Length: 317
Image 1 (tube, rainbow, N blue to C red):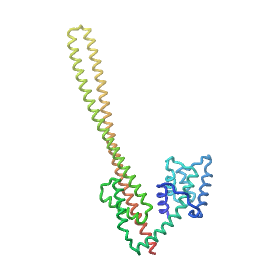
Image 2 (image 1 turned 45 degrees about the horizontal axis):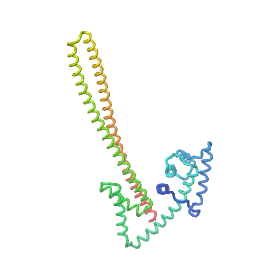
Image 3 (image 1 turned 120 degrees about the vertical axis):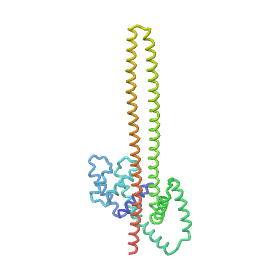
């Protein structure tokens, strides 16, 4: 029952908001539950702010509410499309009413789907090949949009696609959105990594080039200055020689300052390389996250198969 409600939450708030249910579609106890929620928030809202936050779902679930904490959080996230982290009491209760009402529609859909499946078992459909061909064209366009090049991965997605199309067609859009979002996030992370690596490499090359040019210019200036001082010291007086020596000392001090600046630049270069290593570590973490997401998808696939098995067992009994 909880799994069914979570499916309704994902499909109901992953698309455009559905119209308000008619009185005939709304369960008789829905109004009582909504009123109970309104009274709960009114009682705890001492400041009269009139807003509900995601953390409030914990307190609501602790009031022996019929939904689990996960379902309440999914409901809140689905309603909070703008990502503000808060909803008005009216927005939340309206979404709750829609979710409770959708349970009746989901049960009706399952009954119609069961009846349709029984008909298919008795009467073979002459349009099966045509439907399969159309689905393959749709799937091929979707996979082409994803840009996957893994044949085994594509076959697994196709098998899951067919099972959802046959048993849970309302979840097919969620599968497309999930795969597309994951592929986009992975590609976006790779693009950022590649751009950062290019930037770091370019900065390292530019830095090395600047340091080399600076060293060559300094060495040339030092040699020229020494030669000039040596030539002038012969013709000038001792005082002039002292002044020239002072100038030479100042030049050497400037050289030391520039050498210090060079060392600072080398330190910055080392920091940039450390940043590059950190980026590589982050990339590995992203790849690990990708593997975890793929593992989660496989778990969801296994859970779906187990649920289908239980449904078949219940129907057989």
